[in-house]
Image (cartoon, rainbow, N blue to C red; front, side, top):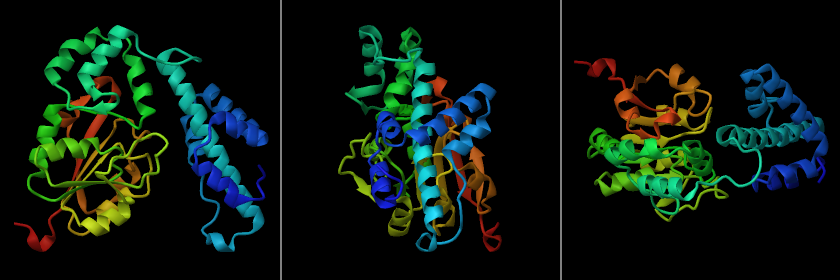
Length: 313
């Protein structure tokens, strides 16, 4: 595959090719990425890793007016970004599980406990019982296998029954929209509690997630315009994503509930969280403790719209 056919290459990248396929198609780009990754890991430099995964925009010039050299450079950065993401994912899996090759799987005992605690069947999650989780989770000695295996299916955390109850009380009878909902698990749990909620996603992760019909195929920005919700919910939004800023700009939104990582580089648009001026940011450690597993370091953050000056008092 050649860089002189950008449309073909970008279409191929959207199919999420494997690391091996990328290496074979673009060996010179892989050499560059491999060297930069090795340097960043050796120096323990997170800023270098961040630059690899989030290359700066080349130009503010509209794509239609870009020259051939700029287009080629954009393509190289997109290829390297995908290569770096896959390499880091593989490295993280090896660190988390202690295995650099072969399949990662639970043994029979650990697998049975995890399945009973967190899943209904297969990878279909259920609202977990905190009582049973706290009683039996210490018996699972292969804890480090859980999230690497779950993330392959687009699962980044697990929800307790107690958390669902608390979220139901926060939302009340207001209309609610979940954006970037993935397989719609959180919306399903809340709907079972009587919450008026619509789950939406742009389906960009079809290679990992089996989207049910209950998840409406809509990008976040379009969903916010179409449903005009009072409450917006998002669980594990991608780091530095472009769509959360639209939540804060959408009239009528009174409350935004974000479930994110305590590590700001891992999820959520923290630059937008801290720069927006219309909502008060409220960390909720009491709710965060209801997310599972505790080793994950997940956090619930609320954003409540500030009262207009004329409405105060």
